[in-house]
Every structure is written in structure tokens, then in C-alpha cells.
Length: 157
Image (cartoon, rainbow, N blue to C red; front, top):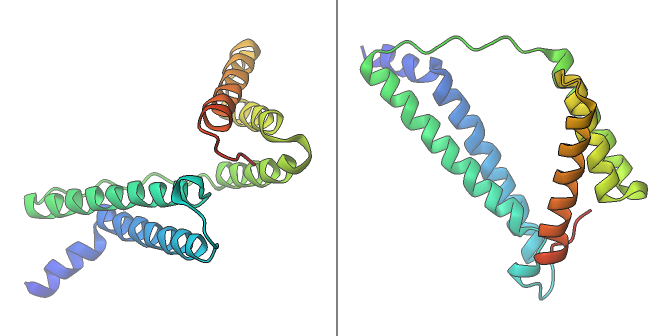
């Protein structure tokens, strides 16, 4: 009975995802803290490692939420839903566009690179209204620049 219960925990997809997200959060937290404290006399409010720490905290909270949901499923006897099939073509496209986005930031800077990145993703996702793609891409890029770059003085790539 005890062995069967352990297998239930290992087979539950929410618990598997929770462990994966927790490891990601821990790795991101360690990366951010090590890099921040290896920089001499850098205040947290000016640190480029503050946002990765915040993201790690949110990913950690997500992992605890998934873990508790998995435990609830096991205790209630609810079957965990089958995961949807992974569309590798879409995954590889998104990774490729993200790498290209990172690469174009050096010479196109933040706003044009972000606009091109969003346009490519919208088109890939099936949106065909060019006016809507243009409005959302430009407004989002400019808004992020104004909020973070101008108002909060966060260094953008």
C-alpha cells in the first residue's frame, strides 16, 4: 500500500511539474544571488538581477501551488488529466524567434526588436489582422520602454 502511494506521487503530472518548476526557481535564484553579490557595491534597486529574483519567487510560488493541487488530486482519488501532445514545430519556432530576438537587440535596440518579435509570434499564432498586430506590437513595445526604461530607470537591452 505504501509503495503504491509513492508511485501515485511520482506519476501525478502536477507534482512532476511542481518539482521541475521548483528546480528552475532555485537555479534562477542561485544564479541571480551569486551574480549580484559578485558585483562590487551594487544596490539591489539598481541591480539587473532583481527581476530574475522576483521571477524566481513567482515560479517558486507556482511550484507550491502545483504541488498542493497534486496532493489534493491524490487524496481525493481524482485522476490526473492526460497532458496534451507537444507540438515540437511550434516549440522550435518559438525558440528560434526568441534567439533571433536576442540577437537583433544588439543592432536594432529594444523597441524595433520587440516589435518584430511580437509580429512574428502573432503571425505564427494565426492572427491575420495586420492593423491589430501593428497596434498591439507598437503599443506594447513603447509602453514597456516608457514604464521600465524611462519611468523606473531600468536598463533595457
